[in-house]
Picture 1 (tube, one colour):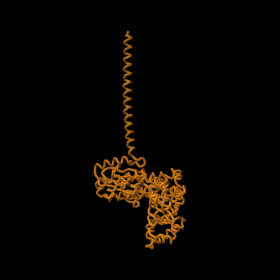
Picture 2 (picture 1 turned 90 degrees about the horizontal axis):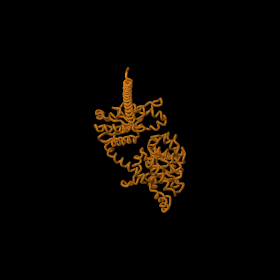
Picture 3 (picture 1 turned 90 degrees about the vertical axis):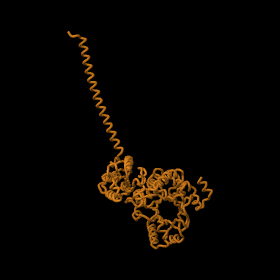
Picture 4 (picture 1 turned 45 degrees about the vertical axis):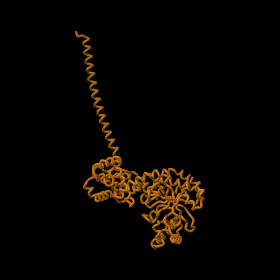
Length: 477
């Protein structure tokens, strides 16, 4: 008869072995699952890393990834960097809608990616801005021809919203090592070239020359100084009177931005406003100037108006300022005393946005002025379609008025146009009595120029209105 204890021992032994086998099996399965999960997590991390380096709309490299690629390529040898902007994309986007605009960007990016030597050599670096690297020695050896070929290939129409849309571009080119030996400097050099191409009207490319390269660091330094200058109150308004020709009395003042630079002296607007455009500083300048005007003119006559200039880069900023802080400005100054002079460049950059600005100005009781009429791309279509309240004739016509019959014929036609539209006409650049007298004979009602006064600080401008110096000092305190 078997020993019960032995049977029990053997049974327990078998059970232990069975349990051990199952535990080993479970451990093995668990280890396999852990390995699979780890591999899955690794794949996801890789996918997330790749996605973090790609622009989600176009599939091209994003700005951060492109800068890494640019730095790596700079270490390997010479190259050319192309920065490309879609001209007037805001207007195209407004016409097509966001979906159509995105479709256009994706189509353009697809063509750019096909032209890139490697996928990482093309990138989307802004809302409607792209970059491309040229690294092949044969292409660098014939760079102007290479750029011209690429420019032509990228300028053809692209499909969007079921139609072919003309795609005008501007391109800025910088070369390494000549224009810069690090990614940041080379990007600045290409941006300077791009701005030069846009300044010439767009639809073209520009290479960074030796002079532009030498000026890049100086411009970047000035841009950094400008931020501090705005905060320190160094950017101030100067006032130049606009005179009524029939009465000889001041009708309003144009407000002109000036920068009291501690080392360079008093800088005119054309020396720093272009630096501010597109960086967010232009909006800060607009805000600062309006604050100064509201403060300077608290005791000036209520009939006196003020005209401020708006560059192409400031249009969107001013719309946002008036829409987000309307009550603030209505409390600071009577908006019905404000004229906003809009440049023809702004019209060419984004006509739809200018129309929006005019509408916002009229909502607040302010007036819109077409500035520098006749000197650029102005045409009757703008005057027919946009409700300007006043037109300022370019000084290029006014200053030749007394000596050039053709200039007089043009001014006469502009004055007749103003009367037909029922808008005020201001003649800019009046420097002699002969020109002022002839303008008056032709029926021009308002004039501005050095004949009457040069732009001056608030105290000097107030003196022209007969405001006592002690009152001006009290207001400025």
